Structures are given as structure tokens and as C-alpha cells.
Amino acid sequence: MRRYFGRKLAIYALTFVVAVTINWIIPRFMPGDPVLRMLTRTSVSNPEAVAPMRAYYENVFGLDVPLWNQYVNYWVELFQGNLGVSVWLFPAPVADVILNAVPYTLALLLPSILLSWWAGNKVGALAARSTWLDNTALPVSYALTATPYMWLGILLAWGLGIVAGVFPVAGGYSFELRPDWSWVFVGSLARHWFLPFLSLFLVAFGGWAIGMRNLIIYELEADYANYLAALGAPRRLIRRYAFRNALLPQITGLALQLGVLVSGALVTEIVFAYPGLGHLILQAIQNQDFFLLQGAFLFIVIGVLAANFVIDIVYVLVDPRTRSGMQGAT
Image (spheres, rainbow, N blue to C red):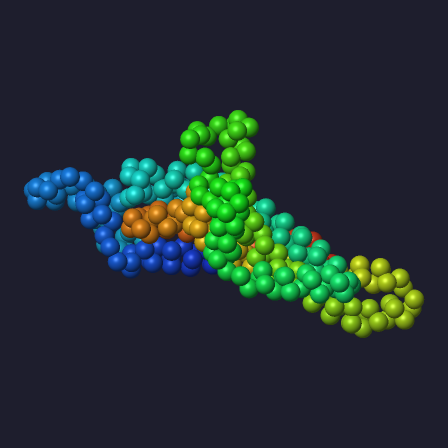
């Protein structure tokens, strides 16, 4: 297992280096000039004053050196925990801006991923042995998983927000409130959180339900299931084994779907103007804030890689065949 996880860590480290390099390159190939953007926000029109101000901003953002030097400096600053200064919210540090948005994104992602995976697998398992549930849950699941996150978010905002007026459709909390730990503020957070969460939950739920239903039907037709049935094993015991075996591909699918779920969360945040990383990325693009953009992508890359590594550990703990293969290899 030590060798297995060492190999996994090496792969993740290489992936991190490549992803961070691409993350650094992309903003620099985007059209626009962040320094020029800063100068247009000032009221200085004297050409003699513009030149020293441009030199000052280029020095602050580290753009006054060649590209190869900027790349080296980026890695040095990254290991020191410095992600630079935001152009849009100058002179706020990028790390501080991102840390204010990360809790909102995590509050959406973690419950929606875990609950949709758990509920989808349960409903899919029940649908595999119930004709009535299969005829009702399966079409609904197909419709949900085929629905784009953005479109479902717009429908929920229109139906439950504008028409019914039950939930707010924008922001992370009521604009007249100040952040604190009062019940009023917590309740406002929950009401603004519900629609983005429901949008992510429903789309992911449909995919997990379909996958588990199909996997259990396949497992129930496998040789071991027929052999157990021939021995007179109870139907409940056979279904329990089928559920456990079908759960393993679903764990692998969770690792593969993390990137899709994260991208769906970012799009959903934009629809609801939810103050997470998705809304932050949109503002960074609109304001040509390269440093905030690459900082937000960096947090996403780290989060996805860390979550995939945790899922790898869970898979090894859940599947005894994996551990047996490791012991045989050693």
C-alpha cells in the first residue's frame, strides 16, 4: 500500500505541476492588459504621470520582467503562500479574496455531492427491484441528468423564486444584513443557499440513480448471483452482495465526476449570483484580473486533486480485492 500511494502521489504531483503551468499560461494569452485596466480606472490624463504609474503597477504585479522570470517568480511566490494582488479589488491580496469565497463554494459542493451520491444510489438500488419505482424514477432520473445545470437553475429561480416567491434568487444573504452569527443571518444564508444546492443535487442525483440501477441489474444476472440462488440463499442476501459490488464502480465514478460537478457548481453560482468561486471567476474575467483568475483556478485544481486522492484511499479501504492485489504484488 505504501508503494501504491507513493505512485499515486507522484501522479498527482505531476498533474499539479502541469495544471498550475497551464493555469499560469492561459491568462497571459487572454486579450487585454491588466495594467492598462488599472490606469483606465484612474482619473489621471497627463501622459507624464501615466508612465510612472504604469511602471509602478507593472512592478506591483510582477510584469516588469521577462515571461520566464515571471513563471519562476510565480512558483516561488506560490510556495510562500503569495498569490499576488487583485486588479479588480486592488490592493486586496488574491488569497484573501479567494478565502472569502471558498466557504460559499464548499457549502454548495460538499452537501450536493455527498447527498446526491447517497440518495441516488439508494433510489437506484430500490428501482432495480421495484417495477413501480423503476417505471417512475427512471424517466425522472433520465430527465434530470440530461438537464444542464444552468437551465435547471434558471427554472428553479423562476418557479420557486419569482413566481412562488419562496426563495431569493440572488446573493449569498440579504443585502440589508451584516455577516454575524445571529439566527436571522444564518436563516438568510440557508434561504439563499437552497436553490443553488437544489440545482446541483437534482442533476447529480439523476446520474447516480441511473448508474446504480443498471449496475445492480447487471450484478443480479452475474454467475455468483445465480450460484447463490441455486444454493437457496435468501434474495435479500443476494441483493446485498449485488449492492456492494455495484457500489465500487460508483465510487470510481465519483472521482471521475468531480470535475463535472465542480464546473456545474461554478455555473450555478453565476446564475444565482452566489458569492463563491464561480461568481468570482466571472468577475475576474470581466475585469481582466489575471491574478485573481489564476488564483481561483489554483484552488479548484488543488481541491479536485485532493478529493480524488481521498476517493482513492476510500476505494482501497472498501474493496478487499485491491488490498489483496497489493499484498500479492509486494
